[in-house]
Length: 308
Image 1 (cartoon, rainbow, N blue to C red):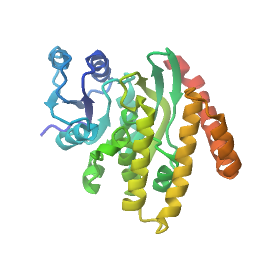
Image 2 (spheres, rainbow, N blue to C red; image 1 turned 60 degrees about the vertical axis):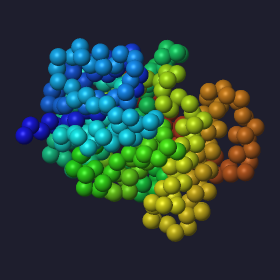
Image 3 (spheres, rainbow, N blue to C red; image 1 turned 90 degrees about the horizontal axis):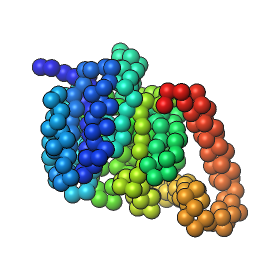
Image 4 (cartoon, rainbow, N blue to C red; image 1 turned 45 degrees about the horizontal axis):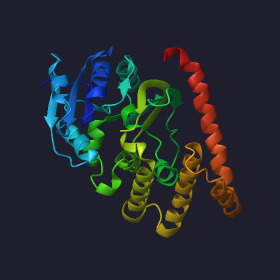
């Protein structure tokens, strides 16, 4: 039986204007040993017509996920035949050498999860950024729980045997929508996955009005739900769950405050000042790490800008 090296899972719903670019970015890869699985939530915008244009084989399945993207990804994982699962959202796309670069790094390695940097595109603002992910540190599950997601789904590939062995899938709870990937990667860390973070940007992540995570108010609420669920129902490294929850909530509140400032949503400098006055050590730690992250991303941006 033919076993592709990568199974590329693309969930989609009414994004025909983006889907062709995503598919072309996979078919144009220099490494060709892959299968493409498109899981369509019964789109009504001509998505099926776009897929018919491709003479090359695409595994095309339709399901009713009722707004739960996790169901589409989980179905893709279930039917995938590849050794590695490569996730790609239908409004993102890859550089042509992505799979080849990753294949060389993971072949004969012990890595279970790989995530690379991405070019960040804003369709309305015509602005370019670069985001890096990770880095891996000891007690990674605890770090993800307290300090937030450090992955991008479209930038990640995961060893399928690791998912099967540990029964890891995306959370299908409605309150986890837009943060189901956060919970997914926390579960990989909880099960002691070996991680590789690649500084080089190998893909393009698009933010637009229809992006699932573009509604950040709902997105932060779903993050809070995921954090609460993991603290009180999954994690076992501490019995003092209330203390862990309060600390994790502090960092979530900081992320919300800084997002509101950056997006100019009622620039709440008063909230920032009050937070500093009440919890100065948390504030200083967060600012220090935020600046280090910004500097790191800027240096990577300068180094790879010519590849954009």
